[in-house]
Image (cartoon, rainbow, N blue to C red; front, side, top):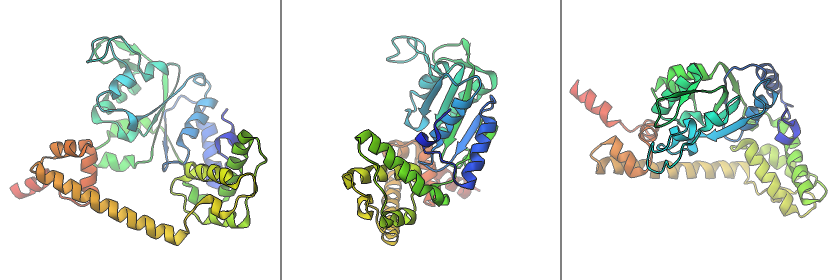
Length: 323
């Protein structure tokens, strides 16, 4: 079983205790699990917890960040390939599904998969078999899949960006991890945990948190959640040089100033990004595929940006004019 304290999963908050109870119920079953939550909330920890308590799949835990896989190699990474399947495929190679056979495969950021890969993933989940790239022979795999994402998959389904049948197949059980700002009772215990853990590695006594430091920690909104808290505390342990952790060791901006800065930065970034998108569309005569290539993003990402910035999608606009 995953060590609660080592992982930072303290379950002091009532919502987290309910999540832990759900984990203990779901883990022994073979059901696929969908873990939802903001970036940094600990989705991977939850996946490891489930795998560690599973009756049949605790020996293998294979994880992959779908967002880090290139569009051209994602199918090869997941399902493997045969020799000569594409340029550079000099030898057969098993994919992550085969590597996780009789174990657990954790698909982090599953919402980033392309429609083609979503279709192949659905077939694998439904029939328990994969077909390597460049092959026609199916191979049996016995894999429990845990998927995670910070995105709104229901909205993606409504927008036609994620397969509804795959969504239903993945969310036999859905677990939502609340953000750290919604469970403030865990902030200080987690901070002390992370400080003690790094101090042991540095072979020094765990530092105490001064009143000023505790106030700063509780006032911070923690947009990066537990991951951000851990990094802040580890930096503070180093900066405190073995003494008590003061507020200035945390290097956190004052809440109001930080909020104003974040709003200003976000506004500047959005304005710059919107201008770039409009310029790319103008240069490509409203061709979304070519504009996406020019911007160095996928067409789906460009579509999301068009919707987010309220930019009329060229095809929709033309269709409306024709009507």
